[in-house]
Every structure is written in C-alpha cells, then in structure tokens.
Image (tube, rainbow over all chains, first blue to last red; front, side, top):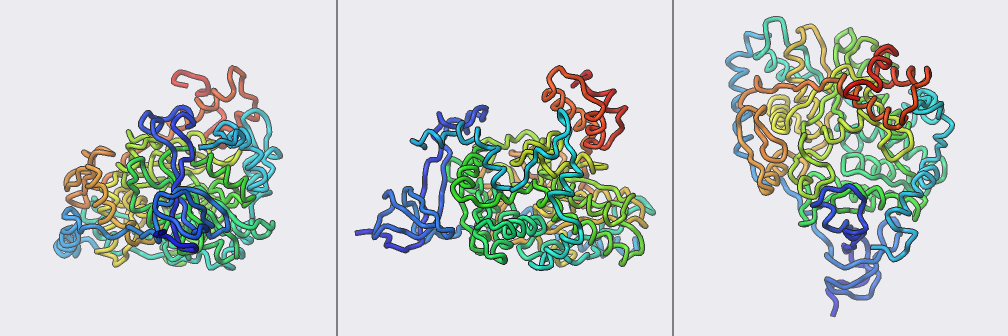
Length: 105
Length: 472
C-alpha cells in the first residue's frame, strides 16, 4: 500500500478559488474555471497513493495540504524539435555576408 | 477554496495595504503630496540607495560588471540593407553573465539585501519571469528563504516551456515555487503567502527593484566611452513593466549621458488578453510584451505596491514594437553570426536594434542593454514546438502579416525586420484619461500639473492643453 512514502519529494494540487469565488471582470474562459495551485515538498504522511489528500513540508518549512498528483515529478522541458523555419537562417545570412559584406565595411 | 471567511478574495484584497506595508517596510504615505501627485524623487532617494551604495551591495553577491560586446557581424548585416552612410555600430550588454543569467539579478540584489538587513526570514516574489531565479539566487547567497509564485498552466494543465524552465531554475537555487493556473488572482495568493510567512515582498516595483538597475545604465555609459570615446547615441531597452526602462535611463543620466536616446521595445501581443485562460498558451513571450508594456506605461500604479518606482513615460524618447517571429529570427542570428546563444525574450530589443540601427548614421553607437540565459524550454526550438502544438501557424514570410495568437512569421531576410512605432503622445493621453478618472470632476492643482509634466516628460502647457479634453 502506498506509492509514496514519508519524506518522498512530491507534488500536490489544490483549488484556490472556485469559479464563483474568482475576481470580477475576468474573461469568461477564465471565470468559468477554478484557480488552481501546485506545490512541491516532502511528504509528511507515512504512505500515500496518487489522488490521496496529503500533507507536505515545502523547502521553506511551510506545511501545505492537497491532493497528491506526482511523486518525484519530472522537469518536462526539452529543446523540442529543430524548427524547419529556423534551420536555414544561418546559411542564408552567412551567404549574404560573404557576397555583400565586403563592400560595406 | 476557502472555508475561512477571512481568506475570501474580497477580505484578503481589502487588507492589501496593511499586508504590503509590513512586507516592504516602506511608509508610502510620507511621499504623497496632493491629489494624484507624489514626490517620486524623494521616494527614490529616501527609500532607495545611492549608485555607490548599490554598486557596493551588488559586489557582495557578484552582480553586474557584465561585458559590453560589439556585434561586428550583425552590424555588417544591418549595413547590407542600409542606405549609404547608414547603419550604426551595435553593442550588446551581456547581462546573461549575472549570477542567475539575466539583468534581473540587479533588481533582486537590493531587495534581498534589504530583507536581510531588516531581519526578514525570507522573501517572496510574484513572477513568471527571470526575476524568480534572480530572487532565488540572491536569497541563496544571503541565507534567506525564498518563495516564487508563478502563473504557469492553463485549465487544460498545459504549461509554457519557458516558465517551466524558470520554475526549475528557482528550485535549483533552493526556492519554493508555488505554481498557479491563469488569472490575476495570483496577487491574492501572493498576499496570503506574505501574511502567512511575514516574508519581505521582493516586488519588482519598489525603489530597490529600480535602483538596482541603475548600475546597468551607468556601467554601460562607462564601457561605451572607454570603447569608442563617446556617449551611446541610443540605448534600446526591452520594455514590460517599466522597470528596465526606468532603471537603465536613470543610470544613464547618473552616468552623465544627457543626450543618449532611450528607446523602449516590446513584443507586439495586441489582441491577446493577459487574463485569458485561452490566450495564455497562444503567446510565445511571457514578458517584454505589449500586454505589460502599454498598461504599465499608461498607469504605473497598478503594481503590487502603492507607488510604483518604475515610471517609463518619464524616460522614454521612443517606443516601438516588434513581432514574435522577428525576435526568434534575431535570436538565431545572434547564435549563428556572433556565436552567442542567448534566450529569445532577452533579445526583444536586439530585434528592434536591427531596424533602428539601419536608420542611424554609421558613426552612431547603438547599445542593446541586455541578454538572458538560454536552456531547455527557454529557447526558440522548444518554444516554437509548443506554439505549433497550440495550433499557431509558423512559417517564413513577411513578419508584418503575423497575427499574435494565430501565427508567427519568421522573416525571410534581415531587411524584413521592421519596428512599429507606438505613438508616445497617445500613451500620455491615456495616462491623462486615467488621471482624470482618479480625480473625478476636480480640477488639477498647479502642483499636480507639474507632477504630470514630469511623469509624462512634457511641458505643463501640454498637460493643460490635453487634460480632460476630447479623447480624454
């Protein structure tokens, strides 16, 4: 029982404001959804599964409760795909400088 | 979701001023004069630090003294498309060399110094930009706790890769990152955290946040003089909340550059709503854009402090926009021709430089005053990969045809990089309109007229001619 153990580095989720509690004057697509929050910290509970209501201690020492959504959450950033629209720029401007660059010093 | 009534949105917002006073340690009331006027210079002097003090504080945490690099190949490229005798020399201040990889280290340095000096246990900052990493890095050096509150994901749980990277960087420097979905109530959560922790508000808009940038302007002035024996003709500054323009311009003045033109550049994101859950992930720039640049210029006191120290219309001589595609293009040029791989957002003013330098004389010196670090997520290829996933059309062509939120058009030639002028007079009139709303039906006092003339870098006569008139 328990995918996550005490002291694991986890991420929790909370609803901060329900749609009816949100600030006035928001565009409808924002006003119609809740304001939500994610925070990471060390699990305080002995054991927990994804979806459980848990407590964590953040690196500043704050205690925060919320729904467990990830255990050792990954940094999902990368360099993406090389963009065809960018790939030839270097070749183009180097050629331009070779052909015209000498006359402009 | 709050069962505690004291934490409802309305209740917390009603306590805003009290929370802020405790969290920045400045009594802003002492600078109020009459009506809409306050004593800006007194605030900067009394609550801030002198240039010499700022230098000494920044030296403690290795901030500043970044290199000024001449971009020889980019200058040559500009001259390929310039009239004979035209094409200014382009220099760039490599602010990516600051500890956290951007000029924001300068802004964070004083806030963290101030927080430490006054015994705060930690600092909090509300930012999705490079400022978060800067505050985290400066806090790390000063042994302070740090919380960064980011607007990161939309209701479909999709996040901007650039902001994800900035969050990772904050964590690398030991900060707690509170990540929120789209919405201006980030400020509400920020207030609750300030109240809960009693930390210092490392706002971008206190006198500390601005005075920290003055060294950038003064360093740049010294470096240009040493390099070319004269003052810079123009300095191009990426403009968002107004701090970069204000601080750099003040530093240039303190450095004796009385005739250097101060030119603001923003990415054009017109048509996109900054509080829209839908638009949030249909833009590829999370700062340095018109969504901040215009509202903060036309009414600076919309910030998280009672009186904003960033007041760009006091300093701007010209203001232009560029497109997202042009910024990605020059980011590629900087890497491919100058061997400098830097983050796209920091290259906003470099894109503007391309067009502005073309119209300037060859003897002129144009300085682009920042670069920022780059990395996974914060780089043209992941940002355009993400834009493509969000249904944005990406193609080569004339960037003038691009529509923010629908298309990003990468120029086919450097000659296609153009700047679009923002009429500063129109921004000043918008400012006056807001001032008139604040005043109700009351007339302006002579002191208010003088205040507005300084605020808008114009004459008292212009204020009298335009206040409460026509489009106002």
